[in-house]
Amino acid sequence: MSKNPELRALRLSAWAQVFFGLLGLGFALYTKSEAILLDGYFSLIGFVMSLLTMKVARLVDRPGDETFHFGYFSFEPMLNLLKGLVILGVCGFSLASAIQALLHGGRPLSVGPALLYGVIAAIGCLVMAGVMTRWAKSTGSPLVTVEVQTWRVDAVVSLGVVGAFLAAFLLSGTRWSGFVDYVDPGLVTLMILGVIPTPIRIVLESLGELLSIAPERPVQEEVQQRFDELVAEYPFEKNVLRMAKVGRISYLLAHILVKPEFRDQNIDELDLIRKRIEAGIRELHPSWEVDTLFVAEESLM
Image 1 (spheres, rainbow, N blue to C red):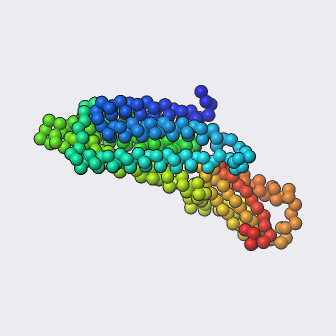
Image 2: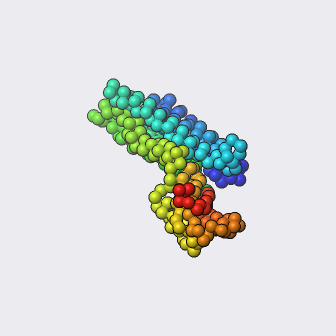
Image 3: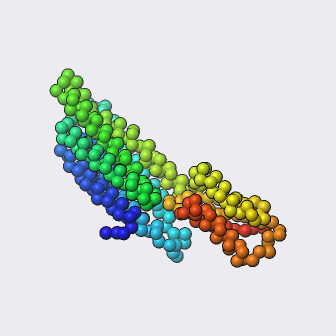
């Protein structure tokens, strides 16, 4: 077993997704429910992506090499982007199928077994969401954090399955039994409308990181304030900070315009200032990479 807690969390998530994916496909074949089939697809997609996630988790721990001089950090948002796009694709296909069924009289299904599946899946997904939340907090891993979001989505979907099939079970045998055939496609539609904001958010955030988007405004202001405090005692005219977030790593490039009386400092003294700045920033955010450049002309900033 891996000693890396991040990989242990991802491996646990992957095996749980295999279980729920196969469980969903089995119940879907028996009950003829596309809602359950969609739930099973989500789990199996999650399993395949978890395998890729574990590979990426190993890669990002590597230092830079001849091919990737700055390391493999960009693989994290690239994987999350792929994951979000795949989920969006499945949602689009399932939504089209559900709308078609609603327009043509719905779909019959076996309500009792479908309700049983919903209960099992809901309890299991809620437990996994709680377990993965603890792992995410202890590891601080963006990859595990996305797994938490995935399990929460699965839990919401499964709870929706329970609610809808419970309603269908109560309607069976009553004068409203004609609506039972509409429950499954109606549920698929509602599931997708409820789920789709999460993959959209993952896609947008991951795309932003691939494009080297800056951290959130409060983080930028916090870093700027700390930086100004660290260099306040030196005769610097101004500084310009540029920041980017890629996966679990944030990058700070600082240009400092020095006054004429400070330009004769030797390289050792400048390196001490660099080390002080880097240590001070990492007290706030341990994962930050910091580069500090001293310039004599403002045009070079």
